[in-house]
Length: 295
Image (cartoon, rainbow, N blue to C red; front, side, top):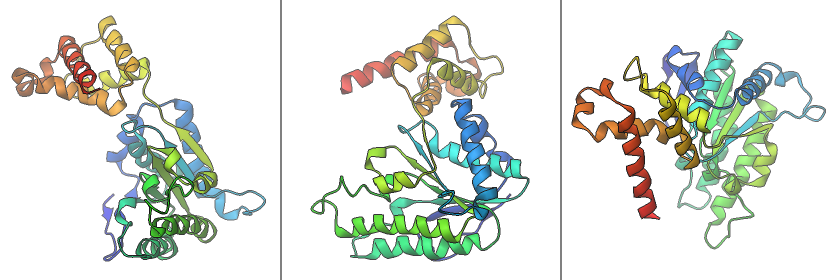
């Protein structure tokens, strides 16, 4: 499916994509998190998109907001897109995926952040929802948008930032009432930095942590298969996976470990299919020593 053109003059929207899109399938299938978590996320989104419009907001309060929390590099943003794509496939109909950049809103002009955020939730998103397609809105790094008011001082954070948080809360409430076909997926690297009132509105909060040894092993094999049909495997690779897990290497850096091993040798840069376990082990050791020196 082609990317939908973002209306001119709309602040904060990075892109609008109509799903399902076969090229997005890997965003769901190749992000290795607990299967039970994936089931909960998919079941929630299917329920929210299909049934929320007929539910009484008091009798069965469903806000249309799920939060993915965890350290950087754990796959939150990619998983959010994969979730929307998988839901579109399951529903058998198109879904609009709207990517919001929260960093586009803070402004030096008093009141401008609040007005920009209000326009997004009160005008832009309802206009998109009026197209009639179920809509998933990604609020990536939402701690930049719904700043914790209890943890922010007026001396270091201008009144405009506090008002912008209030505009987000009012906006999410407005969309929940007026646009039952819209569901928000928010990500955060720092849940403590997100306003508690925003967190309390979430219907579902899922924590993505660092991959365990089994997940690291699977990620390494998956990455190596991009380079060779017969990736190095065996007990030594599993031992490397255990060491990565003990060092709390995030999923993104596990994949980049393979890239750094290629960068260490000209022969691999020219022919990466020759990558061996020893290349990964020596690169891991070098990276670990570099990080220890940095500390």
